[in-house]
Length: 309
Image (tube, rainbow, N blue to C red):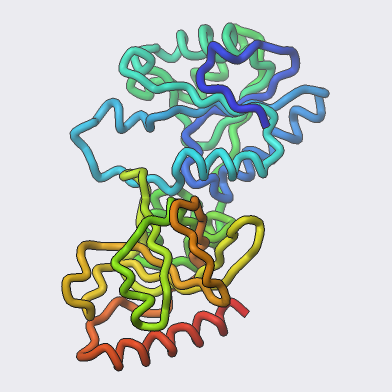
């Protein structure tokens, strides 16, 4: 997959099948669209392209609204899209000026003239252009005018429940990793650099790697203890992760994300790691003394090992 940092870097080509959207989470609904994109491009011996935007349009148009949380960082989204056999990924900078393009200008100037689409595949709820004015019916008219095909994909469902990024965010905020995984099609992940902590875990016999999340818009699950899988330097590890304020530790500081990796004692400071959260095993709680905390950690580890086996 070739990645472009703006539309101008992309050179139009023949037999190009495209889709447009934020694709936050790259969930099962997105995967279905990407599969259709790939299949259609292969039918006409062409190539596939996804046009997405960064920052998220809401960050630009409503900067005072700070409650937006994303399922993926940019790096995570690129990695997930790379697995889909997509040929081209255009990440165009979203700005107020770009947002003022009306629906006709967006289709004519961006999709047709700058990208050169032969076919456009979109999701069931897709709107485009200034103030999201463009509808599927508008697209059909414009497709006829500018000589390209358009196809709308119906909403994908899992167990009779419509898949959406909003529902996945709600599940993650509640610590429901099983539901999130079913909708995403993969375990929810947290990525970041290992930063220095207070070294409290080592004193308890459970050395931890503290993960620093640099993207403030990345959604963080509910406080608690989770069974997790990690991939470090190409090797898979099992572990347990704690999100919270560590109420049993005096002067523990603010909210942290720390993972204890089973059968691994390597110094990871400064390393970028990715942790996949499979299941929440309990809420965060305060223990009367350190011995009770250590006892609970041993129980937590045994439970995580059973889940991960």
